[in-house]
Length: 115
Image 1 (cartoon, one colour):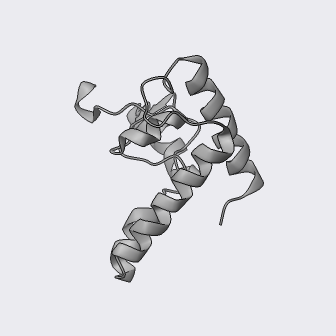
Image 2 (cartoon, rainbow, N blue to C red; image 1 turned 60 degrees about the vertical axis):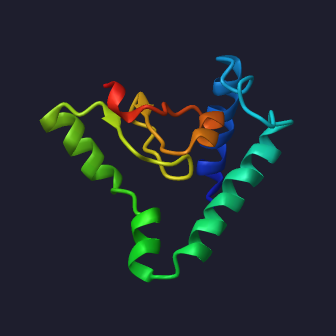
């Protein structure tokens, strides 16, 4: 379920990525936030259909609770989130990485081995 807060986060991330010219190298180029969001949600639905196992579904949609992220940032100095997806990345990190190149519409880095 997409909360209004997450929708606002994705909207901001989409427009920030557009200002950084991250949309220009995507084919097809998104016409709007709505079309980018539709593509993102339809891909999530395809993954859910492809992997019917509850264990696999849970692994694709699991996000750590915010208090765990805060503890990691405070005590272990973690500053980046690896292998998140636009619907569930933690906004308290400056950067996040995704395995899907189309997610670049929402601002993640793609090469997880770059840092």
